[in-house]
Image (tube, rainbow, N blue to C red):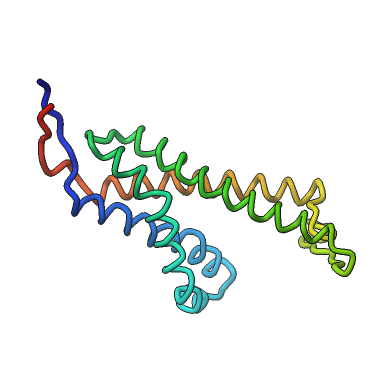
Length: 165
């Protein structure tokens, strides 16, 4: 038999909720402040916070429940934070590219989306520049997930109990 520290249900709930709130602040709050629109944090919270909570409880909570059965190291927290962010990013990209493909098949749909002086998407299909922007944003999102996991580990603290095996 071996004993190892485990996290309590209360710590698990705190971890999931903190992940959602920090994720919302990172995805909506930082860009709002950088664009000199701090009111966007409050305005976006009406839909953003419930959506962040839903994503974290559907995707992150089951992973965290399993992961928090043993004490978490700083490196494993960062790795799992990046992994959860990768799952969320993959789902988002799949939905976005499926939507773009459907738009490209619609003869009544015509669009040209750009930014920074370059076209990112034509009729729902990404241009090479659009793929580059998507890749950069995805990597930034994954790195943010790793940082959020480290902050959550720090805020949750040490395991609350021991589990006998």
